[in-house]
Length: 124
Image 1 (cartoon, rainbow, N blue to C red):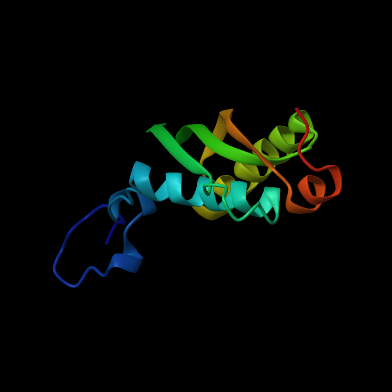
Image 2 (cartoon, rainbow, N blue to C red):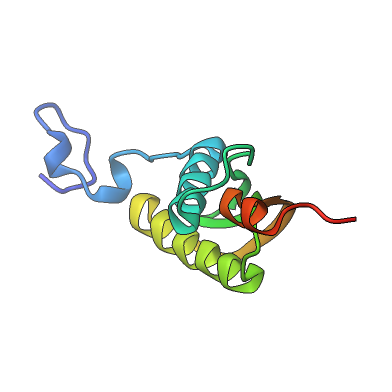
């Protein structure tokens, strides 16, 4: 009995991996993983900050990710964006086995950190 035959008595273990079927992971699932990875990279956010939101386009096991996020102010915006990119690439690769050649990060808003706002006060 060869691995490619579908003879009676053939079990899935007898088939080659490419002949067993396919696994498809929806773009929205990859987007949720990417958004969660961005939250992990950023740590705690101000209470009025929106959680990171991701959109993803997947083609042939390659995911292109766009993340929109809010950050605390003051913050090193470049370092935060690098940390988000690194974490998204790592988590998406580890959890769904996709390559992530592009992670576009857009900072939507900056939120004054509570300790910073209380210490500095408002000035005009």
